[in-house]
Image 1 (cartoon, rainbow, N blue to C red):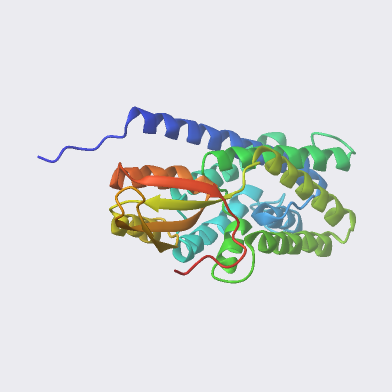
Image 2 (cartoon, rainbow, N blue to C red):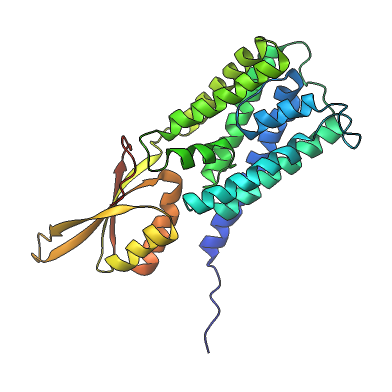
Length: 298
């Protein structure tokens, strides 16, 4: 009789830590939107930038939502199709955690909006609001990243567009977020909106950079006798690509196939764990790397 495989205590502990970080990160992001950014019409890019704009332009339009479309529910309507697109095009490996993350952000955002209203936490000080709003948003995003998750949004769309092209994901994120910020200018007809919004994005980016000091990409070399199984894992299960390098062992002098790939840092724990399940004796070496050209279709 086949025994049921139960997760180990280490796996349960790791998942508990990850989902705790997701809850904290989601709450902090919602706090930033509701108490600091949205009340001053600061548009921080992403789906919540669009949601803040729609929240204001729909005030009085729908009788069921006299104060405007709820930001969390509106963002959810954008995030669901974006996630499905990402899973189809790039095989988003953090799917379950990502779903939990953006659903929690939406729930926390609309819950806080219901109890706190639309009044800013800091009255008549847009600069303080965008500074602390950006900082709290950055801390929340960092918590989510440390849990090997993502809040979906336009960064997912940027990855899809940049996939198999000469465009860098970072550049696509800047382009998409800047377009959303300019949407705020067009709708609100106030140059203060994009200027404060870009400052909030700058603060948010610097906070994430401060806590995420390590290069997000890792070059991975894998030496194993089960190269075909590991290739199926990398290509078929994780949606990554790589190449086989031919080498010869210095001790035994035997010909070997070495797998080389580029992985995002957040995917490394899962990649290592699954390789060790396939081949406990596999040798794995990593180093900092950057993808200066499209990911290898090799």
